[in-house]
Image (cartoon, rainbow, N blue to C red):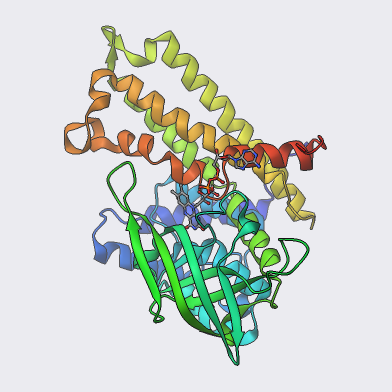
Amino acid sequence: MDFDFTPEDEAFRAEVRDFLKRHLPKTQTPEALAEWQKQVRAKRWVGFAWPKEVGGGGGTLSQQVILKEEMAKAKAPALGTCFMGLAWVGPSIIEYGSEAQKQKFIPDILDGRYQWCTGYSEPGSGSDLAALSTRATRDGDEYVVNGQKIWTTIAMWSQWMILLVRTDPSTESKHEGITCLLVPMDTPGITVRPIKNMSGGSIFAEVFFDNVRVPVENRLGEEGQGWRVTVSALAHERSSIAEVAGLQRSLEELEALARKTRKNGRPATQDRGVRRRIARADARVEAMRLNGLRFLTKQLKGEAVGPETSVNKLQRAALEIELGELALEVQGAAGVLDREAAPEKGKWQRMALSWPEVVIGGGTPNIQRNIIAERILGLPKDP
Ligand SMILES: Cc1cc2nc3c(=O)[nH]c(=O)nc-3n(C[C@H](O)[C@H](O)[C@H](O)COP(=O)(O)OP(=O)(O)OC[C@H]3O[C@@H](n4cnc5c(N)ncnc54)[C@H](O)[C@@H]3O)c2cc1C
């Protein structure tokens, strides 16, 4: 088995490292970050693997992985500022959108002109997303939407939403009759109500639709094809192997924390329990990296990546929880402090409290286990 990248890929890695050495912002001021965004956009590294015709970089998949890995290792600011637009809305528009939609949305996503949010989950349909009931009825050239979404991340700061609605409630399968719409958040009839999370902040919201009129030209894909659009969008969400570099970095930072924190009168790195847990986390991150390379190999051979990505989603969820909990344990009594009073200004406390975003968002661990059991291991479905 050959784990090496090609010479061209390694040359690209050297180019990225060189760029980072010269241009990585030394401060996080708005001006420094704006300058960074300008430079990475000029390099066409925002939307790096998107086709050149739509303004992307036309880069290869393996080079995209290298780019994200090097960025994560260097703790570089994000490439682009339209997070969901770049992660899955843009790829879905490229795959299913009309020419007019590509022209209208893709340049703005690349330039980070506004934010997108994702209106999938509802009070009665989260894991069982296909049971969604927000209704859209056709009225001439418009759909009229009524219903409610929930847990919609950054809905209150977004200008657009990728929304799933039911256009035909009479279909035999619940996966049919669903349609995807692209909706401006300032459309009359939309009410956004932020929800407070356990760390005291509000990053998600409930969104209510009361006779919201959406032009038919804002439909993404055909009517009734929304499930297919969503499955491809969620695959984009689950497939990133570059997250491994972020986890490796967190692990290194955790080791540094353990080195400088005393536990029972000596550095925490000399505590057998802490050492064992760090070593176990390290092995799991490495397993994730190798799995990621396996998916990448499949993609490079032109094969579709399917349910296997759930393995890494599950591992990542477990690791996020483990690293946050271990950091607080290493801190000992100081682990109960928060913000300025806590070690490293509460960075680990925030990580320990923000796990739901990674663990639940995009599908819970139980759902990933179901996918692995049924679609990878071929075990029978729970009746
Ligand atoms: C921080 C955060 C951000 C989010 N952002 C968004 C967003 O931007 N847009 C959006 O649309 N949604 C978002 N979500 C919602 C998220 O996708 C759902 O919370 C998730 O899919 C679970 O759905 P639910 O909350 O309805 O839980 P439920 O589906 O009710 O699940 C409750 C429990 O039952 C288990 N369970 C359910 N079904 C099964 C089954 N068949 N087999 C075994 N166990 C099962 C689950 O694993 C879970 O433990 C976000 C969630 C969080 C926490």
